[in-house]
Image 1 (cartoon, rainbow, N blue to C red):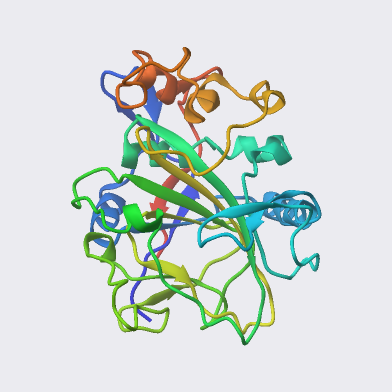
Image 2 (cartoon, helix red, strand yellow; image 1 turned 30 degrees about the horizontal axis):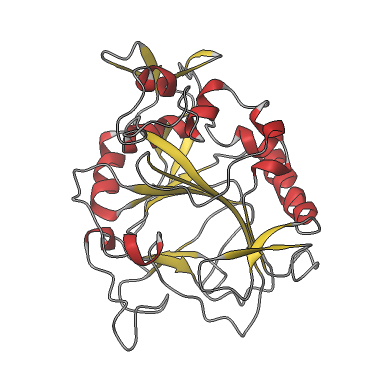
Length: 319
């Protein structure tokens, strides 16, 4: 395995973003360099143990409810199902469009501290474009796979190491992942700047040269660019791996998920509504490419006041 760094949440200092009137967490210089160089960050302890247990139980509940999961449609398209195909809590599940399942899923949209880092990486002209829950069972029939996010279109597009990404994900671990081939999040550090060789007869796999399986603890979070070569390793651990994923994109990129229901809209803060596409006015030609005049104020502050988050900041704990 290659070298990797892990950062943990720790009470510390914040920085003032000039001209915005808000105090927000920002990346350390080391994190910024790692993001530019490797295309991902591994953050430790983002979810507390009681949150991990709660969301793990929520995934068990959600799999028994109707929702969108992969069906017989073409690759990447999801169909409405009465339940997950497997109702075993350790069975496979890939559920999309989570916001209708409860307030707790809404709260993760702009989780304090972590969301500040997302904005520091992407800038303020962003939207939440997808929510997803994945359970990968322990099995000897799934070899893992490697891909980039965004389908055929974004597969061909990358940006420079100094540019904000077009899209990125926050992936929350709800299971401890230790050892080789335990369903680990597997990455090719630095690959976000290279063309994904999908045309090859044998494209990259989690066991290809350059792949790094990232161990992690329940509650950890990975931030990664859409263009990073990544995917799950095989899982021979005897335990299922549970994850939550929230995808963010620049505003001009179409959302993966459906619009939320009116009932859910009523539970959202103004900033969360903006992140789900509510511009404060009806669609006009130019919308989403050109942002509302209050876009930066809306993202850097919410109805709880400025996002002056006074606890956790991120410090290096890699030893």
